[in-house]
Image 1 (spheres, rainbow, N blue to C red):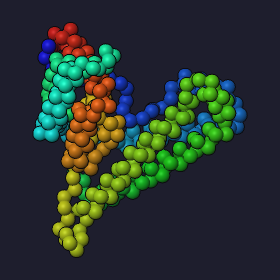
Image 2: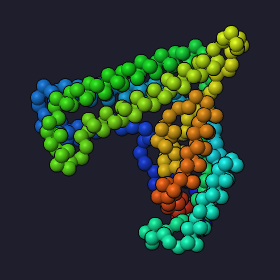
Image 3: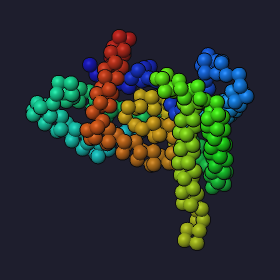
Image 4: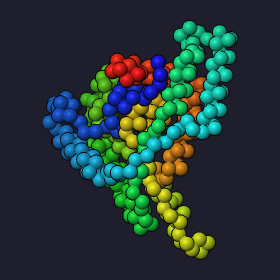
Length: 295
Protein backbone atom coordinates (compact mmCIF):
# COMPACT_ATOMS: atom_id res chain seq x y z
CA UNK A 1 0.00 0.00 0.00
CA UNK A 2 1.58 3.25 -1.08
CA UNK A 3 0.97 6.63 0.49
CA UNK A 4 -0.31 8.78 -2.33
CA UNK A 5 -2.23 10.08 0.62
CA UNK A 6 -4.07 13.02 2.00
CA UNK A 7 -6.59 12.56 -0.78
CA UNK A 8 -8.44 15.76 -1.57
CA UNK A 9 -11.59 13.72 -2.10
CA UNK A 10 -11.97 12.76 1.55
CA UNK A 11 -9.41 14.82 3.51
CA UNK A 12 -9.02 12.04 6.11
CA UNK A 13 -12.75 12.06 6.56
CA UNK A 14 -12.93 15.85 6.26
CA UNK A 15 -15.00 18.34 8.21
CA UNK A 16 -17.06 21.32 7.28
CA UNK A 17 -15.80 24.89 7.11
CA UNK A 18 -12.72 26.02 8.99
CA UNK A 19 -12.70 29.01 11.26
CA UNK A 20 -16.04 29.59 12.88
CA UNK A 21 -19.76 29.00 12.94
CA UNK A 22 -21.88 30.21 10.06
CA UNK A 23 -25.43 31.43 9.99
CA UNK A 24 -27.99 29.27 11.81
CA UNK A 25 -30.48 27.29 9.78
CA UNK A 26 -34.15 28.27 10.00
CA UNK A 27 -34.81 25.01 11.88
CA UNK A 28 -32.14 25.76 14.48
CA UNK A 29 -33.45 29.29 14.84
CA UNK A 30 -37.01 28.14 15.42
CA UNK A 31 -35.90 25.45 17.87
CA UNK A 32 -33.98 28.00 19.93
CA UNK A 33 -36.48 30.86 19.94
CA UNK A 34 -39.94 29.59 18.92
CA UNK A 35 -41.38 29.91 22.45
CA UNK A 36 -39.88 33.32 23.22
CA UNK A 37 -42.36 36.08 22.39
CA UNK A 38 -41.07 38.63 24.92
CA UNK A 39 -39.47 41.96 24.07
CA UNK A 40 -36.14 40.48 25.10
CA UNK A 41 -36.74 37.69 22.61
CA UNK A 42 -37.34 40.23 19.86
CA UNK A 43 -34.04 41.92 20.72
CA UNK A 44 -32.27 38.57 20.61
CA UNK A 45 -33.65 37.85 17.14
CA UNK A 46 -32.52 41.29 16.01
CA UNK A 47 -29.04 40.67 17.38
CA UNK A 48 -28.79 37.38 15.51
CA UNK A 49 -30.08 38.99 12.33
CA UNK A 50 -27.41 41.70 12.57
CA UNK A 51 -24.73 39.07 13.20
CA UNK A 52 -25.86 37.06 10.16
CA UNK A 53 -25.76 40.16 7.94
CA UNK A 54 -22.26 40.99 9.17
CA UNK A 55 -21.12 37.43 8.45
CA UNK A 56 -22.47 37.69 4.89
CA UNK A 57 -20.76 41.05 4.38
CA UNK A 58 -17.44 39.63 5.55
CA UNK A 59 -17.73 36.77 3.06
CA UNK A 60 -18.27 39.24 0.22
CA UNK A 61 -15.15 41.21 1.21
CA UNK A 62 -12.83 38.21 1.09
CA UNK A 63 -10.22 38.47 -1.65
CA UNK A 64 -9.75 35.30 -3.69
CA UNK A 65 -6.25 35.29 -5.14
CA UNK A 66 -5.51 33.62 -8.47
CA UNK A 67 -2.00 32.73 -7.33
CA UNK A 68 -1.49 29.35 -5.68
CA UNK A 69 1.64 27.65 -4.45
CA UNK A 70 2.69 24.56 -2.53
CA UNK A 71 4.97 23.99 0.45
CA UNK A 72 6.74 20.73 1.28
CA UNK A 73 6.50 20.92 5.06
CA UNK A 74 8.80 17.92 5.64
CA UNK A 75 11.65 19.23 3.48
CA UNK A 76 13.66 20.44 6.47
CA UNK A 77 16.51 19.00 8.54
CA UNK A 78 14.72 19.72 11.82
CA UNK A 79 11.69 17.74 10.65
CA UNK A 80 13.98 14.87 9.64
CA UNK A 81 15.51 14.90 13.13
CA UNK A 82 12.01 14.93 14.66
CA UNK A 83 11.12 11.79 12.71
CA UNK A 84 14.34 10.15 13.94
CA UNK A 85 13.49 11.11 17.53
CA UNK A 86 9.96 9.74 17.22
CA UNK A 87 11.25 6.51 15.67
CA UNK A 88 13.80 6.03 18.47
CA UNK A 89 11.17 6.66 21.16
CA UNK A 90 8.73 4.22 19.57
CA UNK A 91 11.39 1.52 19.31
CA UNK A 92 12.30 2.01 22.96
CA UNK A 93 8.66 1.77 24.04
CA UNK A 94 8.17 -1.44 22.04
CA UNK A 95 11.30 -3.01 23.55
CA UNK A 96 10.37 -2.09 27.11
CA UNK A 97 6.88 -3.48 26.56
CA UNK A 98 5.55 -1.75 29.69
CA UNK A 99 2.82 0.25 27.97
CA UNK A 100 -0.79 -0.79 28.76
CA UNK A 101 -2.53 -2.62 25.92
CA UNK A 102 -4.91 0.31 25.52
CA UNK A 103 -1.97 2.64 24.79
CA UNK A 104 0.42 0.51 22.78
CA UNK A 105 3.08 2.46 20.86
CA UNK A 106 2.67 2.98 17.13
CA UNK A 107 3.84 -0.01 15.09
CA UNK A 108 6.82 0.25 12.78
CA UNK A 109 4.60 -0.06 9.70
CA UNK A 110 2.31 2.74 10.94
CA UNK A 111 5.31 4.95 11.65
CA UNK A 112 6.64 4.41 8.13
CA UNK A 113 3.19 5.15 6.70
CA UNK A 114 2.97 8.40 8.66
CA UNK A 115 6.50 9.41 7.70
CA UNK A 116 5.99 8.69 4.00
CA UNK A 117 2.67 10.54 3.91
CA UNK A 118 4.01 13.69 5.58
CA UNK A 119 7.17 13.67 3.45
CA UNK A 120 5.07 13.43 0.28
CA UNK A 121 2.43 15.95 1.30
CA UNK A 122 2.38 19.38 -0.33
CA UNK A 123 0.53 22.08 1.59
CA UNK A 124 -1.51 24.13 -0.85
CA UNK A 125 -1.17 27.86 -0.24
CA UNK A 126 -3.05 30.93 -1.42
CA UNK A 127 -0.64 33.77 -2.19
CA UNK A 128 -2.34 37.16 -2.34
CA UNK A 129 -1.47 39.96 -4.73
CA UNK A 130 1.39 42.30 -3.95
CA UNK A 131 0.45 45.36 -1.91
CA UNK A 132 1.80 48.83 -1.11
CA UNK A 133 2.47 50.77 2.07
CA UNK A 134 -0.69 52.84 1.66
CA UNK A 135 -2.74 49.69 1.07
CA UNK A 136 -1.28 48.12 4.20
CA UNK A 137 -2.34 51.15 6.23
CA UNK A 138 -5.80 51.01 4.70
CA UNK A 139 -6.05 47.31 5.56
CA UNK A 140 -5.06 48.05 9.15
CA UNK A 141 -7.74 50.72 9.43
CA UNK A 142 -10.39 48.45 7.93
CA UNK A 143 -9.37 45.57 10.17
CA UNK A 144 -9.45 47.77 13.26
CA UNK A 145 -12.95 48.97 12.33
CA UNK A 146 -14.10 45.42 11.67
CA UNK A 147 -12.75 44.34 15.06
CA UNK A 148 -14.68 47.16 16.75
CA UNK A 149 -17.87 46.04 14.97
CA UNK A 150 -17.34 42.46 16.13
CA UNK A 151 -16.77 43.55 19.74
CA UNK A 152 -20.00 45.56 19.54
CA UNK A 153 -21.85 42.56 18.12
CA UNK A 154 -20.51 40.29 20.89
CA UNK A 155 -21.58 42.78 23.55
CA UNK A 156 -25.05 43.12 22.01
CA UNK A 157 -25.62 39.38 21.84
CA UNK A 158 -24.28 38.86 25.36
CA UNK A 159 -26.38 41.69 26.79
CA UNK A 160 -29.63 40.58 25.18
CA UNK A 161 -28.93 36.94 25.95
CA UNK A 162 -28.34 37.76 29.61
CA UNK A 163 -31.78 39.34 29.83
CA UNK A 164 -33.56 36.60 27.91
CA UNK A 165 -31.84 33.36 28.79
CA UNK A 166 -33.00 32.35 32.27
CA UNK A 167 -34.74 29.42 30.63
CA UNK A 168 -31.64 28.62 28.60
CA UNK A 169 -29.52 28.62 31.75
CA UNK A 170 -31.91 26.18 33.40
CA UNK A 171 -31.83 24.06 30.25
CA UNK A 172 -28.02 24.03 30.21
CA UNK A 173 -27.95 23.07 33.89
CA UNK A 174 -30.17 20.11 33.10
CA UNK A 175 -27.62 18.81 30.58
CA UNK A 176 -29.08 20.13 27.32
CA UNK A 177 -26.85 21.32 24.48
CA UNK A 178 -25.07 24.68 24.59
CA UNK A 179 -27.43 27.52 23.60
CA UNK A 180 -26.93 28.85 20.08
CA UNK A 181 -26.03 32.33 21.28
CA UNK A 182 -23.10 30.88 23.27
CA UNK A 183 -21.80 29.14 20.14
CA UNK A 184 -22.16 32.37 18.19
CA UNK A 185 -20.25 34.37 20.81
CA UNK A 186 -17.45 31.78 20.78
CA UNK A 187 -17.28 32.06 16.99
CA UNK A 188 -17.05 35.85 17.11
CA UNK A 189 -14.44 35.70 19.87
CA UNK A 190 -12.30 33.56 17.54
CA UNK A 191 -12.76 36.13 14.79
CA UNK A 192 -11.81 38.94 17.17
CA UNK A 193 -8.63 37.06 18.14
CA UNK A 194 -7.74 36.55 14.46
CA UNK A 195 -8.25 40.24 13.73
CA UNK A 196 -6.09 41.30 16.69
CA UNK A 197 -3.32 39.06 15.40
CA UNK A 198 -3.68 40.50 11.89
CA UNK A 199 -3.58 44.13 13.11
CA UNK A 200 -0.39 43.31 15.01
CA UNK A 201 1.16 41.72 11.92
CA UNK A 202 0.16 44.66 9.70
CA UNK A 203 1.60 47.15 12.19
CA UNK A 204 4.92 45.31 12.29
CA UNK A 205 5.04 45.15 8.50
CA UNK A 206 4.27 48.87 8.17
CA UNK A 207 7.12 49.68 10.56
CA UNK A 208 9.46 47.42 8.58
CA UNK A 209 8.87 49.02 5.20
CA UNK A 210 8.08 52.64 6.09
CA UNK A 211 10.91 55.05 5.20
CA UNK A 212 12.88 56.36 8.18
CA UNK A 213 16.08 58.20 8.99
CA UNK A 214 17.92 54.89 9.32
CA UNK A 215 16.31 53.32 6.24
CA UNK A 216 15.45 56.04 3.72
CA UNK A 217 14.82 53.49 0.96
CA UNK A 218 11.60 51.62 1.82
CA UNK A 219 11.62 47.83 1.82
CA UNK A 220 9.29 45.86 -0.41
CA UNK A 221 6.08 44.60 1.28
CA UNK A 222 5.79 40.82 1.56
CA UNK A 223 2.97 39.00 -0.19
CA UNK A 224 0.29 37.79 2.20
CA UNK A 225 -0.33 34.06 2.28
CA UNK A 226 -2.64 31.51 3.88
CA UNK A 227 -3.31 27.78 3.80
CA UNK A 228 -5.87 26.69 1.21
CA UNK A 229 -9.07 25.26 2.67
CA UNK A 230 -8.47 21.79 1.20
CA UNK A 231 -5.07 21.46 2.91
CA UNK A 232 -6.44 22.97 6.10
CA UNK A 233 -9.03 20.22 6.36
CA UNK A 234 -6.40 17.55 5.80
CA UNK A 235 -4.05 18.98 8.43
CA UNK A 236 -6.67 19.63 11.10
CA UNK A 237 -5.11 17.12 13.54
CA UNK A 238 -1.55 18.34 12.92
CA UNK A 239 -1.78 22.14 12.87
CA UNK A 240 -3.65 24.51 15.18
CA UNK A 241 -7.01 25.97 14.07
CA UNK A 242 -5.43 29.45 14.15
CA UNK A 243 -2.66 28.54 11.71
CA UNK A 244 -5.15 26.82 9.44
CA UNK A 245 -7.61 29.70 9.17
CA UNK A 246 -5.49 32.87 9.51
CA UNK A 247 -3.81 34.97 6.85
CA UNK A 248 -0.07 35.50 7.40
CA UNK A 249 1.95 38.57 6.54
CA UNK A 250 4.54 36.57 4.56
CA UNK A 251 5.43 33.09 3.34
CA UNK A 252 8.25 33.03 5.89
CA UNK A 253 5.98 33.58 8.90
CA UNK A 254 3.49 30.96 7.71
CA UNK A 255 6.10 28.28 6.99
CA UNK A 256 7.68 28.99 10.39
CA UNK A 257 4.33 28.39 12.08
CA UNK A 258 3.71 25.19 10.09
CA UNK A 259 7.17 23.82 10.85
CA UNK A 260 6.92 24.62 14.57
CA UNK A 261 3.56 22.89 14.92
CA UNK A 262 4.64 19.89 12.83
CA UNK A 263 7.67 19.43 15.11
CA UNK A 264 5.38 19.52 18.16
CA UNK A 265 3.05 16.99 16.52
CA UNK A 266 5.95 14.58 15.95
CA UNK A 267 7.81 14.95 19.25
CA UNK A 268 5.26 15.85 21.95
CA UNK A 269 4.09 12.75 23.82
CA UNK A 270 0.79 14.52 24.51
CA UNK A 271 0.10 14.33 20.76
CA UNK A 272 0.12 10.52 20.73
CA UNK A 273 -3.63 10.31 20.07
CA UNK A 274 -3.39 12.91 17.30
CA UNK A 275 -0.65 10.87 15.59
CA UNK A 276 -2.76 7.71 15.84
CA UNK A 277 -5.76 9.57 14.41
CA UNK A 278 -3.74 10.86 11.46
CA UNK A 279 -2.43 7.35 10.72
CA UNK A 280 -6.02 6.07 10.67
CA UNK A 281 -7.06 8.90 8.36
CA UNK A 282 -4.20 8.01 6.00
CA UNK A 283 -5.29 4.37 5.95
CA UNK A 284 -8.90 5.39 5.26
CA UNK A 285 -7.75 7.70 2.47
CA UNK A 286 -5.60 5.03 0.87
CA UNK A 287 -8.34 2.42 1.16
CA UNK A 288 -10.80 4.77 -0.54
CA UNK A 289 -8.28 5.47 -3.30
CA UNK A 290 -7.59 1.75 -3.69
CA UNK A 291 -11.31 1.08 -4.02
CA UNK A 292 -11.36 3.63 -6.84
CA UNK A 293 -8.30 1.88 -8.38
CA UNK A 294 -6.07 4.86 -7.67
CA UNK A 295 -3.76 3.21 -5.12
